Length: 404
Ligand code: NIG
Ligand code: FE
Image 1: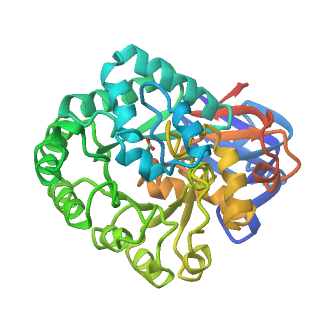
Image 2 (image 1 turned 45 degrees about the vertical axis):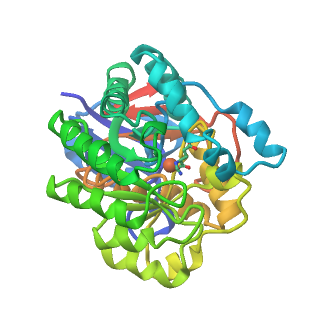
């Protein structure tokens, strides 16, 4: 059951030695949602003859895209702060004056579950239109145990409403809520760590994250959260070096983190730590753009050390009001000087690694899940080159083709 041959396409496999792992005039064979054969159409084995064959009319087929860093469950919006920043206030000033993340915390706490879900689904739909099949969603706008858990429960409900895989990340160490002013250590113990244990017990946590920054938490506080995560056997990731160099990436690497994210202020000489621990560098050009940052992440050093780079939207109401992963890829090229091939790897293969999902997702290879994006595009560079537009022809979800 559910066997298909998809033929008449250019397969952008993101595996093997050819650029993009490209196979012209390709065929992809799927059984029960897994890829069982991929290669040149003319080499299709005889045992495929009885399988229904669907011609894709010359389309480009890539692995489905993966958005490995989002905050897309939240209440309200911050368009007023956008205007304030444009007239000169900085992100940090607004945060210290009680705006920023804390203003979204207020709006998130008062929103009902259904309101949070409805808002999230709008952003999910934007991502689906970009060929996304896996989305990571962080907590971090609740900042009480109950509200942090509620955010992750809402995130998990997305899977009941849309054909998408959701990974949930515990990010209680995102900002200090007003009720814990000047008591950051207590907050870390009472909410970030105690809450993590409870959320983990409820099966809500796939990974643990934190905001290691002057306006967030210190490396010492993050170490405590990471130790608690390690005791529970949970992988970690970190918002590191977004606004300053606190050596968060070095800490993340010490804990074998899945990813270190942002990294504009990463010292080039620290890139080797990420290489050694196999930690993915998640680049977030939407936040760089929206905050009008001028310090570039040390892409050349990451490349030299062979650190895998991912690209994500960071979709959130403050620093990155962005729900197009293809636009993030385009920005990663133009702003950060990634090649279009690196950008696509960043939204497929390396994004899968940033979520610990590389066994199932991120390339078109034998044994991987048949989650693919089918594009009307002349070649894979086009996906990063063209900003906006409606390039997606359809998606292959669990082996079945769905037209857009
Ligand atoms: O990834 N840096 C911290 N967290 C988010 C910002 C969240 C917000 O501004 O609401 C980020 O940029
Ligand atoms: Fe973020």
